[in-house]
Length: 173
Image (cartoon, rainbow, N blue to C red; front, side, top):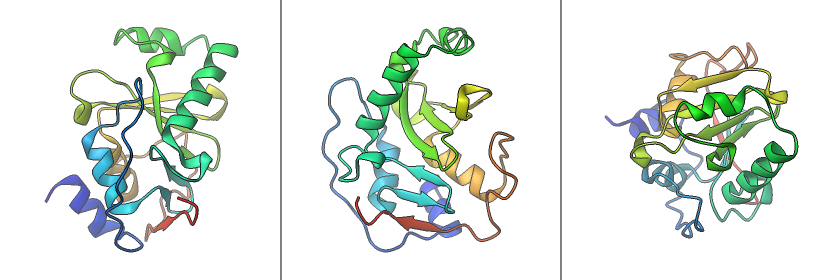
């Protein structure tokens, strides 16, 4: 069973999606496994807390490209002193980050685009950019690890995930 199948078994999708997604514009590569995730679920919310983005979402707050452009702008205007050094370890800058998810608490999940797209690790950044966690997992792998309890991020609340994680699709996606 692959990661997406395991995630669907743990947290079923709200209904058949198989969405056809537009091609992301230059500078916004989207890993094939994330496109499969969005095809299965659509953009929406896991366990009433973690919002997953898709390129071309009709809801601006769930549009991967729009969210990424906004956070890149914010990171240029309000630089965070520790983040550039962390990214430099992989030869990246904040303009290389691609935000694929966010939380109700304004925490952010980014891909670190190094290596093959399906193997891009995830950088979790706490709201206020106070703490960071690097996960050697794809977006699907992160969701599976978090929702199954295999991985706990201390920058997320103690009540996430719930015992029975659910997914809800955005009505505007």
